[in-house]
Image (tube, rainbow, N blue to C red; front, side, top):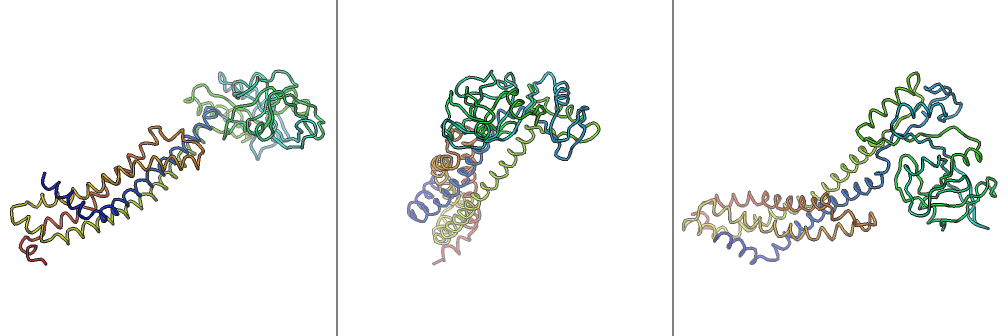
Amino acid sequence: MIFWEIAKLNIRIHLLRSFLAMLGIVIGVVAISSMGILGNSMVLSVSDSLRTVGDSVIVTPHSGSGGHFGGGGSSTSLVITEQDYQQIKRVSAPNTAIPVLQTSDRMKLGVGGEDIFAIVYGLDPDDVPPLLELEAGDYSRGDSGCLVGSTFAKDNDVKVGSRIAMGTDGSKGTLRVTGIIKERGMAFDLSTDSAIVVTKNWFDAAYNRNDYDKVVVKVKNLDEIPAVKTAIEKQMNRRDEVVDVMDTRKVMESIFEAFGQITTFVSAIGGISMIVAGVSILNIMMMSVTERIKEIGIMRSIGAQRREVMSMFLYEALILGVVGSIIGGLLSLLGGYAISTLMLQTTKYLFVPSSLIHIVYGMTFGIVICLICGIYPAWRAANLNPIDALRHE
């Protein structure tokens, strides 16, 4: 088509000007796509970190409560009694209810090692495998063994077989590390990465405690989480609000919604640069119309239709948009790789469909902006009076 060829010729004649216009589109596409990839990668990263706790309902003592719990047990501190736990276990059946003991204590690693301070969890040995996954070693069965979190192990050079003296000057005895817990990241139930896990019996003997700090209910069917949460609240809070029941799936949904809003916001910032690029396209196209008024008059005088003149200028805008968007899309892969490496220290989420789709969004937006900004100059060129155009100097 002759008008397509004329459009390409005009871009080649004004190559520098066309390149600068495309550069704005390239920058806009890279900004939108890279920010979208980063936002999606953050959502996927958090989702992976929370995948082990998204099936949980967590029961903790209500911060304003004291005295009698709804299940009939009594407490003068913020704990869940054995009787309360049994009622939570009963109403949440057939799902698994895991009672958790928690405190913080000093401990010493090895002979002559420095004292450190860490969280200590107490769990029944049978409750550990459904809750925690190991990256090394075995689950502790005896009261003389313990598990340590991956971050705890790395920071303190702890290996399977290492010994930890618990309490000030080892006053609570020595434990042997039987296993290292796989990194869990952000968790609502047990933050074990920088903690150690001991048996419930050892915890009871060492700290003289047999009331629980929380109960974690692992729900088999995710659709039943709201029903389990309601049943626990109805049973335990029937007289007063004495326990707080957290649905981790709802919390995750709130987090993902917040990340989605952040992604939209940063992509909108990239969209501003695209709009600026569109204004540049509009300016260049208006200059092109002004410079070619006499040429347009000649075309119209020899029979060119208005729509043909208009299509010629729209072709120019389309070429700038498509070429700029393709280059921007390719560079977005590099931009997404760099941002993912710097911000998340991983690129595992870069080549998933939900991340790559943001490149398509950026390229589409770039092409659409170019066409929109080319419509007015093309319309103006098509509606020039041929006689006035031929007289133009």
